[in-house]
Length: 235
Image 1 (cartoon, helix red, strand yellow):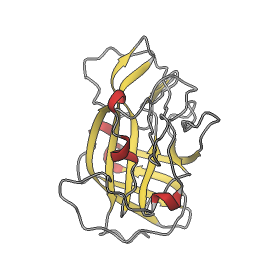
Image 2 (spheres, helix red, strand yellow):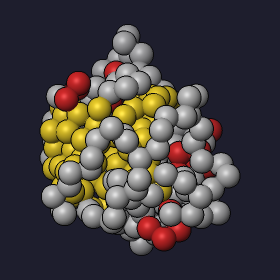
Image 3 (spheres, rainbow, N blue to C red):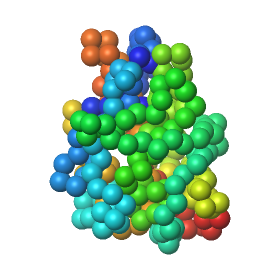
């Protein structure tokens, strides 16, 4: 991830069940990336863009020492060839949404998915495609000006949950969730979330935590870490 959901430097946190429901104006926004790592963020007010993810598919394919660690490293699946995503399905939270490609604006921030479409997710096309070697970045709003949006229940995903991404080449990249974490936008771990990885991984990002009415933005980001499932055949 409303008026405009914007993301400061990535920092998600689980929204408090008792938080006051904010006026729905927020937008997804990502902060500028540094040292070849994309500092993406979601949330804030409408119209705001995402942060600046760094690197293209080739850069993403380089292994990095600071890739997101997994408590128990699962067997890795062979990366798939590059192919843009067309649809995201997460059965456990009833998500079935089309993709739109996200680019950087003139200030170097990643533009958010359209705020007038509550059931659409965005993929940063300057990075790895889902299933390709590297960390593919997918963003979605938690809510919009008109009500709940596609990633409203993202924070409720559990380790082991399946995430299916249909690609333009007809294949389906199936990912398994490793963890769901929230980070304060002020202390977002850019390297961990956006760093290069030696295998095919996925990051699903939206807004979370309490809503700051003065800033018209959520204070945290929710990030789902997932890996390409070797049990799936990718097609």
